[in-house]
Length: 276
Image 1 (tube, rainbow, N blue to C red):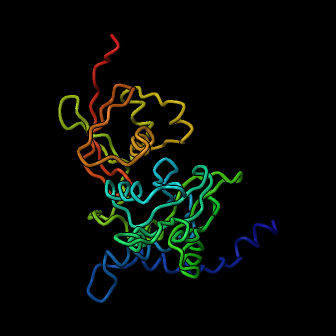
Image 2 (image 1 turned 180 degrees about the vertical axis):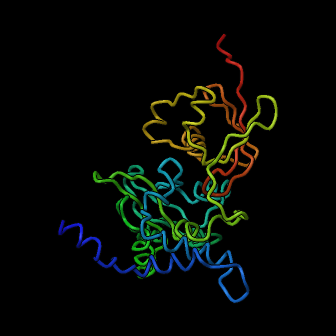
Image 3 (image 1 turned 60 degrees about the vertical axis):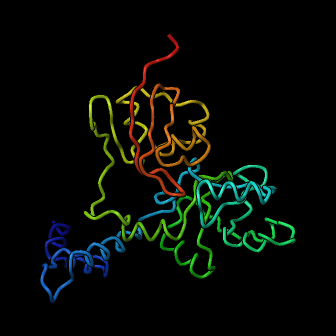
């Protein structure tokens, strides 16, 4: 009885600052004196950022583009020319042995000169963080250390993924081409008979359900989770725009959109099994 009375007369706990701001955003009306839709969108994303971890924004291991520490100047130039990057991860024995990163523009000092090429001399330190690292903390760490990239490592020291300053910013503002300002789930869309198109973020499970896709042991080892990750894991590199990739599961992927770091949009066809 006393417990019920206490609950009846007990004052509600005061709202936190985050809750008060959230309430104000929810009440904001679209008028000139108030916050507009885009401002509310950005502020809402910032409020949600305190729950986001490095694992949620990282580029998966299978999509990381990297060069070995012993790469020659010619091979380095060919790699960058095929898929231009501004920064590249540098590894030692394998991708679990990350040594740092290089800015592509730093290679210019070795061009048209007699200066001996040394990747080590231009390799910069990189941050190493756990998958559970809050991105707000990571963002401040990047700012203080002036390091725009972080490798996400598991408890055994293996590389899980890569987070850049831009990945965190995109979590706040969205992709540049996201005119609807909505976080839509990628869909497999049939554009004509037997021809589909999809955002490269489409989960691999969707391909399994639609086409009976089976991952190889190598792809399972790479922890492939998305359509884009599957293509990069299979090729061992980011493909070119309009490149056609035929997967052993009798699926043909035509690359419709791509940037230097990842596949963006793919056309999918199921092809006849040639074994028979």
